[in-house]
Image (cartoon, rainbow, N blue to C red; front, side):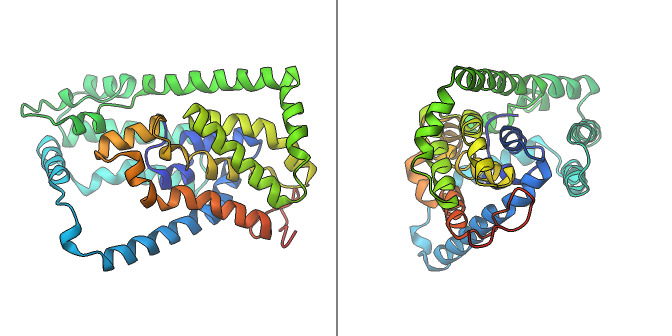
Length: 318
């Protein structure tokens, strides 16, 4: 997996890299984390729908750009592949696995095997081609398409595979080592002690976590480091306030996963800008979910709404 591409699904999918990473960094259960994320991500999603609906209904049609590039991409994809509703089966398997709390790795492998079989049946790929894509990632040359391929199609499709995850795994190991050095050297304790001096309530704790995570996102441009380092730093503070660790994991994703796409020099920000042909600064005002997620996290922190104590009971107004 690579850095987050679609924020809504990344924050709630049990197969997303950052979704799996946040509860690990915070020290809580994956599905507890996902359920807790629904409050902030769900609120941000509803707000986004309202904003887009209002804009869509009020914006003059003549002010909208003609989506020639999108139409060109769709036409190329229709020429390359044979689409069929049955092709939705692999993501359905993933969703069912998540719904029934099945182990992540077997579900991913089953969905991958189904995808390879469907590629052979519907797209005419050989078994060797399917296994190559499974190992090293897909490439448009595998389709045998002889026409001109626009760069956006290559950017969209040329990715994936087991080897595509190696950079993520290596970065996670390095981040854990980085966090371990800070922890053992006492740096985190010193930083936390200074931060804790200004923390007097659950709201200020959540706000401090959000600010630290956003700072790491801006400095490193990586959602992984933005989740891992603050997770290591603030975990003792959440314990001190008697809060469940899933409050921490949720906050890490609200301010880490969601903010990185707004950073122009981050992997996610660069990918979206290049793929969409729109600069990060240009689409930033319309990325409502990205910045409203951590705003809702702060609001819930100060009001106590949806916050849970260590015994998983509601914090209520504290």
